[in-house]
Image (cartoon, rainbow, N blue to C red; front, side, top):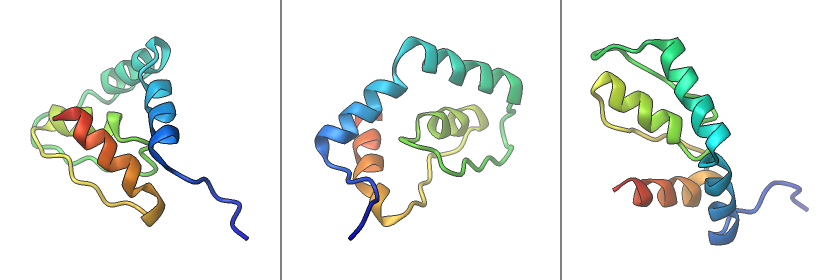
Length: 85
């Protein structure tokens, strides 16, 4: 019996909506400011949730968003990539 989270379209939308609230968006902005990333730097975000911060960090350093994730995170990451297009 698994006690892990089960991801589906509904849970993915709920997670995404949480990460898009003004306070979390502001938190991402503060993190990006604190990091002061420059083009050409390399960034690794471990445990990146839906990947919104990872996507913004990749854009800041002039890179593409590469995703390596566990099996149970695939649907969530696919949803975010689709939303970012």
